[in-house]
Length: 394
Image (cartoon, rainbow, N blue to C red; front, side, top):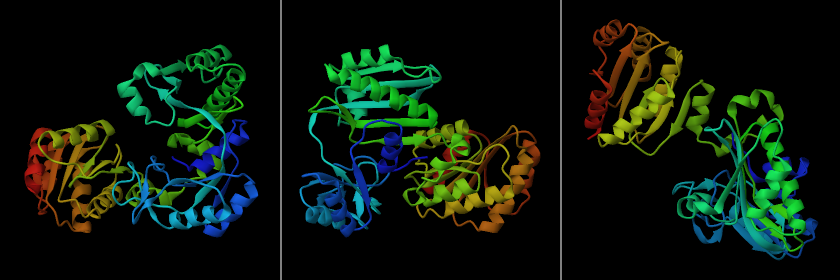
């Protein structure tokens, strides 16, 4: 689950991690009032959407208005907010349509001496969190990793014991921090690591992490995402979810117990198991096709879930064919075949449907499909299925 920057900063502020003073505004008047309340000679008005790249992003019909802008008066803050709120902001992560801005964060300006990068993710290799820092703050960290990986320094830490003081000081030295900045860095890093563990984060990223003229570290931006499987024990965090920022089909799929991610292709995929879903998409690409989605119905899907899955797939106007690829391990092929036939008749297909079944009761499942009277293209293997569905949209 993702949250907005202002929500992440509020979590950090409560945990004692330094962040600038800021006020959320949902209108031009509120933005002007926020500037006056902050009492700073300069402030920054920042569009609040879940996508990154806001600083370089522009409003769809106003290329002169970026998603993040420095302002020097209450009137200017109001004008920028007026240009942003209710408009579509296009960034490198939103696609061409952009994302509607519903609110802005008006934040106090600060004296920036240096910009650094700091992030925490779960390292699957060591099965624990790893803290990463870089002197190249404010840049796309993926570019730094690709072009100058020697500028990224990492420290794994024990989630129970937290980041050690010696680890924080070692990273501070790598970053070239001096004097009071070292103590500030140790406090900042240990605090952020503590929040990461306590909140069951899957990502915590501060970019840029700034060193002020006084040598103090401050989170100028903040991105936090949480492990969805842990939300049952964080009711307060779950309340921060903003579904208006999420793909509607993904929200709908989640409500039905389906794992769905929308993509840009034209072949809808209905698969059981994340690994098989990834393999299915790879083979479609290998044979010249383009997956329209990742959709995992899980190991125990029923007729209602398969029907809803078909409805979600067919609601995408780009979908020109659907591939059902099921391995009957936990689930019997007869169960999924019955569900596919029932869902097909219920939903009303208007695109080719290719079905590949393997596993428990596969012959009985194929017989159900063959005798159903519905227009299904049967496939004998994964490669055969991928070729047939790609040919169907050619």
